[in-house]
Each structure stands twice: as structure tokens, then as C-alpha cells.
Image (cartoon, rainbow, N blue to C red):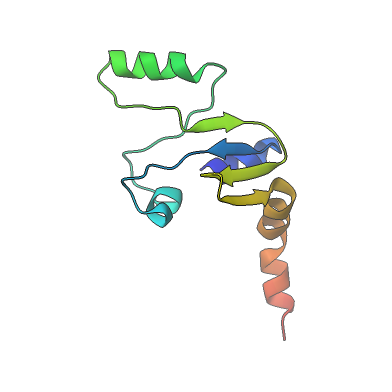
Length: 95
């Protein structure tokens, strides 16, 4: 979801994963129990969610020209856009 948001807004993000969940599952899982919300004040969103009994936490900040996960994995938004927009034409053009 964060990569899709970065593509749509043409802006990067730095996020920290949930250490209790395997990274691949945390990054690519599409279950109905997790949502990503972008807001001016993450703390206000977390407080509002918790007030209603909904678990929530800030996972990072938006900004810059790259998507970084756990300060270990970084990819530029430009590279993401290129892969997203050109993978099918490139695949179809392959011999």
C-alpha cells in the first residue's frame, strides 16, 4: 500500500516494519486487518483510533524521492514508477 501511495503522490516515505511479522508478509500481505493512513498528524490519528479501541501505530513519514524500509531497503520512486508503468510492455516485447 505504501508503494502504491508513493507512486500516486510521486513522493517517497521512510517506514519501519512490524518486527513480529516476517518482512515479506508485512510488506505484501493484503489481509483485511491492516490499513495504511496518511495524515498531517499521525499521533492524532493513532490517538483517535485507540480511543475507539482500534490498535494503531505510526509506521513512518512521507517525504523525499525514495521509499525506505527499516533503513535497510531503499528504492527511488522513479525506479518504482518505471517498474510499475513498463513491466508489461517490457515483458510482452521479450523474445
